[in-house]
Image 1 (cartoon, chains in turn yellow, red, blue, cyan):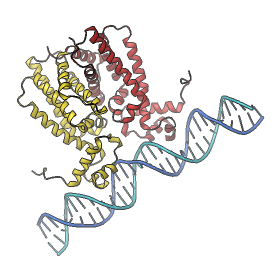
Image 2: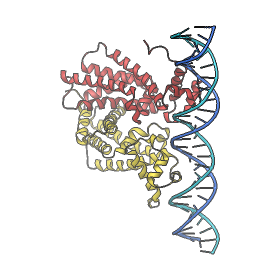
Image 3: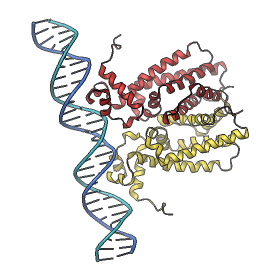
Image 4: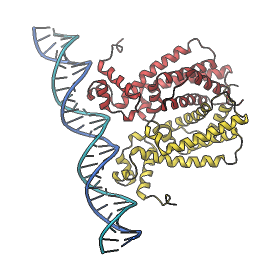
Length: 196
Length: 196
DNA sequence: ACATACAGGTAAATAACATTTACCTGAACA
DNA sequence: TGTTCAGGTAAATGTTATTTACCTGTATGT
């Protein structure tokens, strides 16, 4: 109950400003002064709530990611069988990126090039998601739904890689992609390979 | 013959300094002053040869990428059959990233978050590589080696995504990459899928 | 032989930021 | 009723990137 007492309006405005600016600009070109102006607060206030510009970015990502994880949990409810779960996770991920372009931008392009990210709270959430996928793969191997001769981490890399690369182009070049179709094709490729 | 006349020593030193610094630091934390000191030149000279810090980064990447493309061309010589070529491209890419960690760092983490990159000369080289892969996929579909019901660009995304994601973790966490094993498993997964 | 252009380079000034500091205000509360 | 403290401001200070003005040797055309 203690943590939930609504955050001060200034803080909320700052977070929203950052999100807005990230809609069409990349992190490194956004200045503190712009954030302050957009939020309608002074520059100093930003440093009341965030250690620096990067930590603000991480916070914005954290809000997205918490929501994303909730959706994943929800989407997996009632789904049984490792392959079915895999298909669902693929769909949910693509849907998450497709629905929230700023979220996709941040995680695919803006955070991984700094060391602080890997120490941050939000990276803890990312690890949670990794674990979800890894657990599904292990389950699949145990039930015999997934072959044993490919390393589990490589399977994970391939799944994430496919999803991220497909969504990346969409983020970069503003291409529209159909979540359903993309998810279906990636799932199909991962499950069956490209041989006829 | 005009372009090849050895570049001025200062320029070379600057490029090498940037490369050296990127070995264990990320782009945004490297300062112009550090680059100058490491290179043993003054800060001003950097701006004689490069428009700004980012363009220097792009230039470093360009040198790596030109070499990388040469290797790919060489590696593909004498290989026939779309699937064999695909396997070779996968192996060569992983080898390229594994052998040149700085190259991997730059292309996977440091350039894609800026608009200038996509206008740069080096991005032209990246497109060339994309085309090589796409051509192989098309060839495979024509010869019947590759199924037709998955979009070619999605196949490309999955291949690149798998390679990049697998190498990324190794770049980030300094893990050693077994090129042969990683390449073999990715190839296997892409060709046959994960079903037993 | 001589001005001169110019590549290669330096040093110091300036501009563009991020970050810190000192302070103000009103409401809760002991 | 005086005090504390969250929420906020305005201006100073650091840090870096970038620009500017200049220096020096050497090749080059006349």
